[in-house]
Image 1 (cartoon, rainbow, N blue to C red):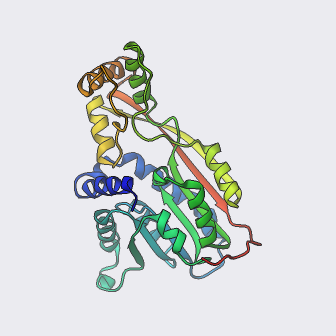
Image 2 (image 1 turned 180 degrees about the vertical axis):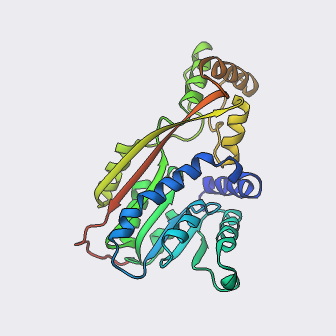
Length: 293
Protein backbone atom coordinates (compact mmCIF):
# COMPACT_ATOMS: atom_id res chain seq x y z
CA UNK A 1 0.00 0.00 0.00
CA UNK A 2 1.29 3.49 -0.88
CA UNK A 3 2.30 5.71 2.09
CA UNK A 4 -0.61 8.09 1.53
CA UNK A 5 -3.09 5.23 1.70
CA UNK A 6 -1.94 4.27 5.19
CA UNK A 7 -2.98 7.72 6.38
CA UNK A 8 -6.30 7.58 4.52
CA UNK A 9 -7.05 4.12 5.93
CA UNK A 10 -6.33 5.27 9.49
CA UNK A 11 -8.59 8.30 9.11
CA UNK A 12 -11.49 6.30 7.72
CA UNK A 13 -11.10 3.57 10.34
CA UNK A 14 -11.35 6.23 13.02
CA UNK A 15 -14.33 7.92 11.34
CA UNK A 16 -16.28 4.67 11.00
CA UNK A 17 -15.86 3.93 14.69
CA UNK A 18 -16.76 7.44 15.80
CA UNK A 19 -19.16 9.67 13.89
CA UNK A 20 -19.00 9.31 10.10
CA UNK A 21 -22.73 8.79 9.53
CA UNK A 22 -23.67 11.66 11.85
CA UNK A 23 -21.68 14.11 9.70
CA UNK A 24 -22.10 12.55 6.24
CA UNK A 25 -25.09 14.67 5.21
CA UNK A 26 -23.67 15.56 1.81
CA UNK A 27 -22.35 12.04 1.21
CA UNK A 28 -25.85 10.70 1.87
CA UNK A 29 -27.32 13.15 -0.66
CA UNK A 30 -24.74 12.01 -3.21
CA UNK A 31 -25.50 8.32 -2.64
CA UNK A 32 -29.26 8.88 -2.94
CA UNK A 33 -28.83 10.93 -6.11
CA UNK A 34 -26.64 8.26 -7.67
CA UNK A 35 -29.19 5.61 -6.75
CA UNK A 36 -31.95 7.56 -8.51
CA UNK A 37 -29.79 8.13 -11.59
CA UNK A 38 -29.32 4.37 -12.00
CA UNK A 39 -33.06 3.87 -12.58
CA UNK A 40 -32.65 4.11 -16.37
CA UNK A 41 -29.84 1.56 -16.32
CA UNK A 42 -32.04 -0.75 -14.27
CA UNK A 43 -35.05 -0.42 -16.59
CA UNK A 44 -32.91 -1.10 -19.65
CA UNK A 45 -31.22 -4.16 -18.18
CA UNK A 46 -32.53 -7.44 -19.66
CA UNK A 47 -30.53 -9.85 -17.55
CA UNK A 48 -32.06 -11.59 -14.58
CA UNK A 49 -28.78 -11.37 -12.67
CA UNK A 50 -26.21 -8.57 -12.64
CA UNK A 51 -22.66 -8.53 -11.38
CA UNK A 52 -22.20 -5.18 -9.67
CA UNK A 53 -19.05 -3.64 -8.18
CA UNK A 54 -19.18 -0.82 -5.63
CA UNK A 55 -15.93 1.08 -5.05
CA UNK A 56 -15.39 2.72 -1.67
CA UNK A 57 -18.54 1.49 0.04
CA UNK A 58 -17.74 3.29 3.31
CA UNK A 59 -20.40 2.64 5.94
CA UNK A 60 -22.82 1.32 3.31
CA UNK A 61 -24.91 4.40 2.43
CA UNK A 62 -24.97 3.43 -1.25
CA UNK A 63 -24.72 -0.32 -0.59
CA UNK A 64 -28.06 -0.20 1.22
CA UNK A 65 -29.67 1.56 -1.75
CA UNK A 66 -28.20 -0.93 -4.22
CA UNK A 67 -29.52 -3.88 -2.21
CA UNK A 68 -32.98 -2.32 -2.14
CA UNK A 69 -33.15 -1.33 -5.81
CA UNK A 70 -31.20 -4.23 -7.34
CA UNK A 71 -32.38 -7.28 -5.36
CA UNK A 72 -31.21 -9.72 -8.02
CA UNK A 73 -27.68 -8.36 -8.30
CA UNK A 74 -24.54 -10.02 -7.01
CA UNK A 75 -22.73 -7.12 -5.36
CA UNK A 76 -19.03 -6.87 -4.58
CA UNK A 77 -18.28 -3.93 -2.26
CA UNK A 78 -14.71 -2.70 -1.76
CA UNK A 79 -13.18 -0.36 0.79
CA UNK A 80 -9.67 0.24 2.13
CA UNK A 81 -10.76 0.60 5.78
CA UNK A 82 -11.72 -2.51 7.78
CA UNK A 83 -13.94 -0.49 10.15
CA UNK A 84 -15.87 0.93 7.20
CA UNK A 85 -16.48 -2.55 5.82
CA UNK A 86 -17.67 -3.75 9.22
CA UNK A 87 -20.12 -0.84 9.48
CA UNK A 88 -21.39 -1.45 5.93
CA UNK A 89 -21.92 -5.16 6.60
CA UNK A 90 -23.82 -4.39 9.80
CA UNK A 91 -26.02 -1.93 7.89
CA UNK A 92 -26.82 -4.45 5.15
CA UNK A 93 -27.36 -7.28 7.64
CA UNK A 94 -29.76 -5.14 9.69
CA UNK A 95 -31.93 -4.65 6.60
CA UNK A 96 -32.04 -8.36 5.72
CA UNK A 97 -35.33 -10.18 6.41
CA UNK A 98 -35.24 -11.90 9.78
CA UNK A 99 -35.79 -15.29 8.17
CA UNK A 100 -32.55 -14.92 6.23
CA UNK A 101 -30.54 -13.10 8.88
CA UNK A 102 -28.15 -16.02 9.30
CA UNK A 103 -27.81 -16.83 5.64
CA UNK A 104 -24.89 -15.69 3.52
CA UNK A 105 -25.22 -12.00 2.72
CA UNK A 106 -25.93 -11.13 -0.95
CA UNK A 107 -23.02 -8.66 -0.78
CA UNK A 108 -19.38 -9.72 -0.83
CA UNK A 109 -17.36 -7.21 1.21
CA UNK A 110 -13.67 -7.03 0.37
CA UNK A 111 -10.82 -5.10 1.93
CA UNK A 112 -8.95 -3.65 -1.04
CA UNK A 113 -7.48 -0.55 -2.62
CA UNK A 114 -9.27 -0.23 -5.96
CA UNK A 115 -6.17 1.11 -7.75
CA UNK A 116 -4.27 -2.07 -6.92
CA UNK A 117 -7.20 -4.49 -6.98
CA UNK A 118 -8.52 -3.41 -10.38
CA UNK A 119 -5.16 -4.02 -12.02
CA UNK A 120 -5.31 -7.69 -11.00
CA UNK A 121 -9.04 -8.47 -11.20
CA UNK A 122 -10.50 -10.63 -13.94
CA UNK A 123 -11.48 -8.89 -17.17
CA UNK A 124 -15.14 -8.53 -18.19
CA UNK A 125 -16.42 -9.63 -14.79
CA UNK A 126 -18.96 -6.86 -14.04
CA UNK A 127 -22.02 -5.37 -15.72
CA UNK A 128 -22.10 -2.20 -13.60
CA UNK A 129 -19.49 -0.37 -11.52
CA UNK A 130 -20.61 2.37 -9.14
CA UNK A 131 -18.96 4.61 -6.57
CA UNK A 132 -20.11 7.52 -4.42
CA UNK A 133 -17.86 10.22 -2.91
CA UNK A 134 -14.71 8.16 -3.44
CA UNK A 135 -13.01 8.94 -6.75
CA UNK A 136 -11.50 12.20 -5.43
CA UNK A 137 -9.07 9.96 -3.51
CA UNK A 138 -7.69 8.24 -6.63
CA UNK A 139 -3.99 8.95 -7.10
CA UNK A 140 -3.91 7.50 -10.64
CA UNK A 141 -7.38 8.21 -12.04
CA UNK A 142 -6.53 7.73 -15.72
CA UNK A 143 -4.86 4.37 -15.17
CA UNK A 144 -7.62 3.24 -12.83
CA UNK A 145 -10.38 4.17 -15.29
CA UNK A 146 -8.66 2.06 -17.95
CA UNK A 147 -8.67 -0.89 -15.56
CA UNK A 148 -12.36 -0.33 -14.78
CA UNK A 149 -13.17 -0.34 -18.50
CA UNK A 150 -11.41 -3.70 -18.75
CA UNK A 151 -13.39 -5.09 -15.81
CA UNK A 152 -16.72 -4.18 -17.42
CA UNK A 153 -18.45 -6.35 -19.98
CA UNK A 154 -19.35 -4.90 -23.40
CA UNK A 155 -22.38 -2.65 -22.93
CA UNK A 156 -21.68 -2.23 -19.21
CA UNK A 157 -21.77 1.05 -17.31
CA UNK A 158 -19.68 3.07 -14.87
CA UNK A 159 -21.50 5.60 -12.69
CA UNK A 160 -19.99 7.66 -9.90
CA UNK A 161 -20.29 10.81 -7.85
CA UNK A 162 -17.41 12.92 -6.60
CA UNK A 163 -16.65 16.48 -5.53
CA UNK A 164 -15.91 19.30 -7.96
CA UNK A 165 -13.41 22.20 -7.64
CA UNK A 166 -15.94 24.62 -6.11
CA UNK A 167 -16.07 22.41 -3.01
CA UNK A 168 -14.92 24.28 0.12
CA UNK A 169 -14.58 27.48 -1.91
CA UNK A 170 -15.05 29.60 1.22
CA UNK A 171 -12.31 27.77 3.09
CA UNK A 172 -9.76 28.17 0.29
CA UNK A 173 -10.59 31.83 -0.25
CA UNK A 174 -10.20 32.50 3.47
CA UNK A 175 -6.81 30.78 3.62
CA UNK A 176 -5.68 32.67 0.51
CA UNK A 177 -6.74 36.01 2.03
CA UNK A 178 -4.63 35.33 5.13
CA UNK A 179 -1.56 34.41 3.08
CA UNK A 180 -1.89 37.51 0.90
CA UNK A 181 -2.35 39.78 3.93
CA UNK A 182 1.01 38.51 5.17
CA UNK A 183 2.67 39.06 1.79
CA UNK A 184 2.92 35.31 1.17
CA UNK A 185 2.01 33.13 -1.77
CA UNK A 186 -1.27 31.29 -0.99
CA UNK A 187 -1.02 27.54 -0.37
CA UNK A 188 -3.64 24.91 -0.99
CA UNK A 189 -5.01 23.16 2.12
CA UNK A 190 -6.76 19.84 1.53
CA UNK A 191 -7.55 17.93 -1.64
CA UNK A 192 -7.67 19.44 -5.12
CA UNK A 193 -10.73 18.30 -7.07
CA UNK A 194 -11.04 17.62 -10.80
CA UNK A 195 -13.77 19.38 -12.73
CA UNK A 196 -16.57 17.60 -14.55
CA UNK A 197 -14.97 18.35 -17.92
CA UNK A 198 -11.65 16.92 -16.70
CA UNK A 199 -13.37 13.71 -15.60
CA UNK A 200 -15.16 13.56 -18.96
CA UNK A 201 -11.82 13.81 -20.77
CA UNK A 202 -10.27 11.10 -18.59
CA UNK A 203 -13.22 8.78 -19.23
CA UNK A 204 -13.05 9.33 -22.98
CA UNK A 205 -9.29 8.76 -23.05
CA UNK A 206 -9.81 5.54 -21.08
CA UNK A 207 -12.11 4.28 -23.85
CA UNK A 208 -15.56 4.94 -22.40
CA UNK A 209 -18.37 6.19 -24.63
CA UNK A 210 -21.58 8.19 -24.12
CA UNK A 211 -20.14 10.09 -21.17
CA UNK A 212 -22.80 12.07 -19.29
CA UNK A 213 -21.95 14.66 -16.69
CA UNK A 214 -24.04 16.59 -14.17
CA UNK A 215 -22.98 19.21 -11.65
CA UNK A 216 -24.87 20.78 -8.75
CA UNK A 217 -23.90 23.31 -6.10
CA UNK A 218 -25.04 22.59 -2.56
CA UNK A 219 -24.56 24.98 0.34
CA UNK A 220 -24.47 23.68 3.90
CA UNK A 221 -24.71 25.80 7.04
CA UNK A 222 -22.62 25.27 10.18
CA UNK A 223 -22.71 26.96 13.57
CA UNK A 224 -19.05 27.94 13.29
CA UNK A 225 -15.90 27.40 11.24
CA UNK A 226 -14.73 25.04 13.96
CA UNK A 227 -17.88 22.92 13.59
CA UNK A 228 -17.44 22.88 9.81
CA UNK A 229 -13.83 21.66 10.08
CA UNK A 230 -14.84 19.08 12.66
CA UNK A 231 -17.50 17.76 10.28
CA UNK A 232 -14.98 17.59 7.43
CA UNK A 233 -12.54 15.69 9.63
CA UNK A 234 -15.30 13.35 10.82
CA UNK A 235 -15.89 12.22 7.22
CA UNK A 236 -12.22 11.44 6.59
CA UNK A 237 -11.00 14.61 4.89
CA UNK A 238 -8.54 17.20 6.15
CA UNK A 239 -8.02 20.93 5.72
CA UNK A 240 -4.37 20.95 6.78
CA UNK A 241 -2.39 19.20 4.05
CA UNK A 242 -0.11 22.18 3.34
CA UNK A 243 2.81 23.17 5.55
CA UNK A 244 2.58 26.46 7.38
CA UNK A 245 4.89 29.09 5.90
CA UNK A 246 7.88 30.54 7.68
CA UNK A 247 6.71 33.47 9.78
CA UNK A 248 3.13 32.18 9.87
CA UNK A 249 2.63 29.37 12.38
CA UNK A 250 -0.34 27.01 12.51
CA UNK A 251 -2.05 28.77 15.41
CA UNK A 252 -1.78 32.18 13.77
CA UNK A 253 -2.78 30.83 10.36
CA UNK A 254 -5.95 29.15 11.59
CA UNK A 255 -6.93 31.96 13.94
CA UNK A 256 -6.74 34.47 11.09
CA UNK A 257 -8.47 32.07 8.69
CA UNK A 258 -11.37 31.61 11.13
CA UNK A 259 -11.76 35.38 11.36
CA UNK A 260 -11.68 35.84 7.56
CA UNK A 261 -14.15 33.00 7.01
CA UNK A 262 -16.66 34.34 9.52
CA UNK A 263 -16.40 37.85 8.10
CA UNK A 264 -16.70 36.86 4.44
CA UNK A 265 -19.16 33.95 4.51
CA UNK A 266 -21.86 34.37 7.16
CA UNK A 267 -25.03 32.28 7.04
CA UNK A 268 -28.21 32.08 9.14
CA UNK A 269 -26.80 29.01 10.89
CA UNK A 270 -23.39 30.65 11.37
CA UNK A 271 -21.17 30.14 8.32
CA UNK A 272 -21.72 28.67 4.84
CA UNK A 273 -19.79 25.93 3.05
CA UNK A 274 -20.09 25.12 -0.64
CA UNK A 275 -20.03 21.61 -2.07
CA UNK A 276 -19.90 21.01 -5.82
CA UNK A 277 -21.42 17.61 -6.49
CA UNK A 278 -20.47 15.89 -9.73
CA UNK A 279 -22.20 12.84 -11.16
CA UNK A 280 -20.80 11.05 -14.20
CA UNK A 281 -21.98 8.03 -16.12
CA UNK A 282 -20.25 6.35 -19.04
CA UNK A 283 -20.84 3.25 -21.13
CA UNK A 284 -18.60 0.51 -22.43
CA UNK A 285 -18.81 0.16 -26.23
CA UNK A 286 -20.61 -3.02 -27.29
CA UNK A 287 -17.73 -3.81 -29.61
CA UNK A 288 -15.12 -3.61 -26.84
CA UNK A 289 -12.42 -6.18 -27.31
CA UNK A 290 -11.90 -8.11 -24.07
CA UNK A 291 -8.30 -8.04 -22.86
CA UNK A 292 -6.72 -10.45 -20.45
CA UNK A 293 -5.17 -9.31 -17.19
